[in-house]
Image (cartoon, rainbow, N blue to C red; front, side):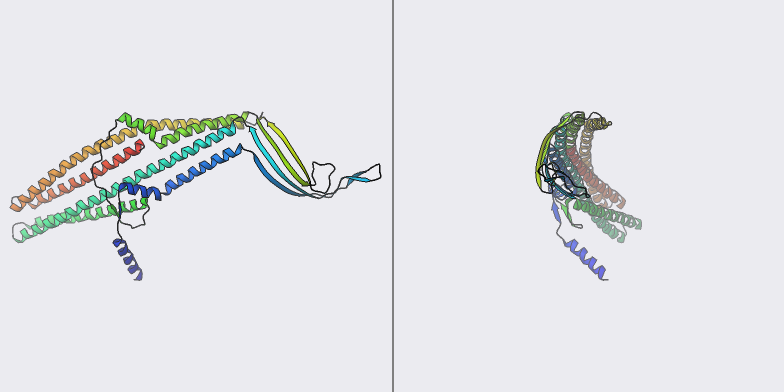
Length: 433
């Protein structure tokens, strides 16, 4: 019982909560700030920037501090007797060996491999920024779709509510005329059946409104159960000023997905150069400072801390690597071809997508014009039929038919305008705005 009371109290608090009033732009802004998807893309961009630091660091001097301890077995000492009858110990028994070293390695020439890998990493980092823009654009379209779905659901519910009110008023009139003996009982039953039908539509419309509201609340980061009030109106979007060819050219220049693909093609070319550098010689300098006990560089050995240093130039040229370089080059070349094909596929798809979005806009505008005419005609027909019914020259069935026609026309108009707004948002996404 207490659980039921708590649930009822929670429901009452939710119902009394002030609705969150949002325009389309405000909903998009809140969604971008709360989106985990955008944050994931930003984290991947940070990881790509970190890879750039790694590649750049590979070409810089590397300094490392080293230390070690080695325990060896006991050995026989070795020495010589000097002419002055003194014994000179040359190889003492030193089982405890300590070594410290400050080591320096600096690759001077790698055949362009490290430079190419750094350039590829930089290009990938900029492509990751385009991935963020892609995620933001996708989320903007998703929020816009959810927003206009909510507006459509709210408007549909309003239309159904009005229809229910009209049917109830008509039912009262019919019952009064039946009581006066002017109508047969079947007319009352027909109106009651229509009223039940309208109330069922009302329940379905309210459920659709709640689902759309919950989806939009999730996208904008609102708490579950938060009521949302869409303050936008169902007005027709402005016409598209550009031509089809201009929009296709604009999409190829502005779409972040295409910019990302172009950059990844360039990055694949750099990785191809890096793989080709595997057949070239590598030149580097190295050196270090040792402080060891005993110091193996000093002869004779003695159980004392001594210092030494070394510096040198190292050249390596891979003559036979078992096909590793050839495999890396083939892999990089294939990856480059794959990126080029993805780019070509995108260019072929974007033109079709623009044409589809323009067709959707044209169709939705034509549907709005037809729906407006239908609403005007249905409203006038309902008025005329209502006047004729009041005069007793038509039946209640005609009134119900006119009412259903007006309801359907109003719903069609609502859906047509929402479809036009959504088509406009899809075209903006396709163009890259």
